[in-house]
Length: 167
Image: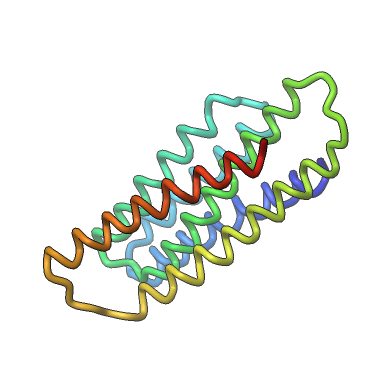
């Protein structure tokens, strides 16, 4: 559980600093204040084990990230900040589940596999998102609809594959 807590706190710090730097570099220091307060609240809620606060704080990060896209904050800061918030929320839920369970067999293996999955998803997500941010294409509505349908099919097949793999 030591590594999970370390990655959890690191993700909160990365999320908060990334979004705050994005807002400050975009000339909107009040956004950085909101992000810093939200990050501080997350640390406080973690200290007091307020499970209900994790989802609310994630919604706050979503709102702040959305506001950042609206006021033209540099997308890479928003991407890093939101990714850090998602990782923090996921690990907060894992920590809460571990606290509620009396006995978990091989907890180190469970945490290691969870952290490896998060690392792989994070690397792929940031890499593909960074690629998407840097490349610009003009799509007609028909192409966008076709790509959306392909994405939904691929996502449903991936979820089905993952469900079968865990049985």
